[in-house]
Image (cartoon, helix red, strand yellow):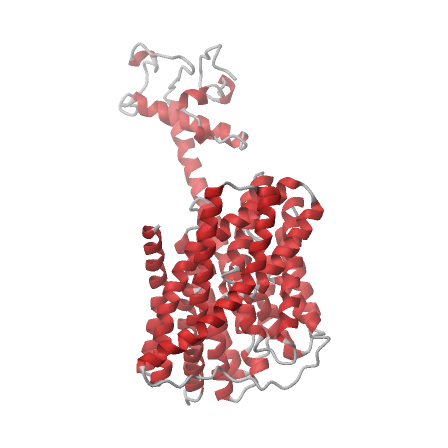
Length: 586
């Protein structure tokens, strides 16, 4: 366990170090921070490193297994009513426990915090039900995503303009570090039980569909609350003058987050215990492991959120306000791109997703590829957000083309990349976006004289949007390379096979032993070409296996030894003369 925790700490440091360095460089160059802001940021960075390590460890030990066990149980039950009720309850509970939603809800005027939180949570729960039913009834993911996003854009026409950007922001913040591990594992569990060729593809997409529910929820809620002028201000900066006071600020904030996370997590734990005693009946060792994982998850979230809220939020607000007051404001666009490129690496849910993608695809979609795609996506997002704040571009001019491009790409990108892309958008907008990028954007907006409600909000939505087309673009490149590789391999095998046929090489399939080399090959074989009979035998068998595998894709021939494979071979499968052992044909 200590070794695993040590590895998690190293991963956390590698993820957070770039954004820490960027902020410190800004501090010593363009935006010198006062002692209080700089000190809180440095202590907050330490909290983030420890919190992320504990959380990711807890996610592996508890949240992922809980989701998988519940998903498998619900899928095996074959009871639609149970799946609907359980999914609605679990989706609602994990969303209420999502810290990012609490942060966003406190900053939205006109709508009471509790009303917004509960409505958004129910919206996610309803769409989790839809996502589960999609897996069971094998409904096209691309069609559902396209239809719901088009519907959201149409509904947005009738929504007060003050709430349009906030609606899409809500979709981004609800799928954060607490909800994502559970939702992803739930999909894996259901898909594993259902099985079939598409089970791997169906393991992804739940987070994507779930993030749509809050968009509709906020849009509908906006019809019941009159918009009003926003009096929002960036986060207040705590005045401290000594190192001791810095730590006192964090210590004072810890009980608040301990209570908040505890109350949010408790209903989910109770629901799991009900399923455990009623149906799952997991062994004690598994329960102890999950219990320790929940403890790690709880303290990891508490420490992480304390760090980002107390340490990173004031730093983001101060730097944004300072840079927004400069005459050369255009520098915010490239600076935002650089910050976005590195800040996504500090999102806990991103690490959960990239590991899950690599595991379920057998390394076909590696962590490095996904991480790079994430970084490029968020770099584009933050650059667009800065451009929007400085120029006052309407959110419509970014949302409609962005989602339009993503929907078009669903028709060409491999299905698994489509599902992963929309999941990527859901997980990219986590605590770092809500507690650093949003205050940073609010600071820039206030300094530039803009409307925080209409111009600053929307950065979360942009962060959630750009991965939709960048990851699918990676899928198109992957698809093309796969075709080229397959064509090259097929051509090489056919060329070798043709050369053997031209030399009249004849394999006596099924015979157990050969007395000598000449009995295996005709006398006119060019022995310089076939200097190694064993090599020639291997090449011919590989070519034969490929031919049969192309016609029998339901058989995994890699699992069979060569002798076992011969039982599937008949003389008619090959274009070479063969003597068949009467007992060898299957």
